[in-house]
Image 1 (cartoon, helix red, strand yellow):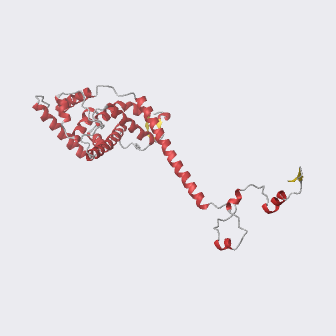
Image 2 (cartoon, rainbow over the protein chains, first blue to last red; image 1 turned 180 degrees about the vertical axis):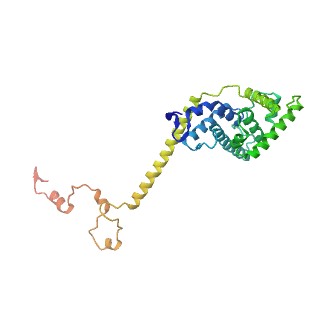
Image 3 (spheres, chains in turn cyan, green; image 1 turned 60 degrees about the horizontal axis):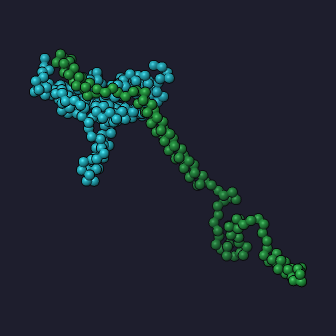
Length: 176
Length: 120
């Protein structure tokens, strides 16, 4: 880690280390924003701001990737809380459908596997994505999701069972 | 991880990769934008702290301020009624050069000098 590379307000993070995981962070942000690219880019920017200003401080209790994923996850949660409260306000005001609010954008993707993953409950979907697609252990994934490892394991097992069942109905077997 | 887990992982991985088919935006671009936004937020914070400090100093200065002439004092109503020599505070705004209307004006009016047989 070059000295000039280290962030002023986050001495355990370097710019080059962030650059190395940028693609994965963006992928995670994409899935947090229902595949809305501009919202995902904004989310990643916001996460980097948190790191630059030291609001989110990395203390090496996990890997950098796990930490940055957690920052993105927390920001996405608060973002959705804001959107949800705006939606409630608009509905209360009698606007019906909330105009101008971001609508989830489904990726151009219609495979049985994708639909089965999308049909999973949120927590199960998250852990499957983190473990299967973001190369994380169940422990790290649980940390990102803000749940205990035991809870994470339960979500992981249920997700796998649900996926196998759904895909078996579509003639795709993933049993031993 | 069992074989079936591995196959399931591959299938989910492929499905997700297809969903994320476009590459991530350049790190440098996102990083620069984040740096700029962090800079603006920092400046805004400093401005807010600066304004609060100036307001606090102004408030303290106002509370502890005494006029150049000494202590603040109020006009004493009785003292005011017992004297004819009161001068309004606004007198301080008059120019230094003054004339006494009783001493100076009669001299001007009662001049004995003539001009063309007529008193000035």
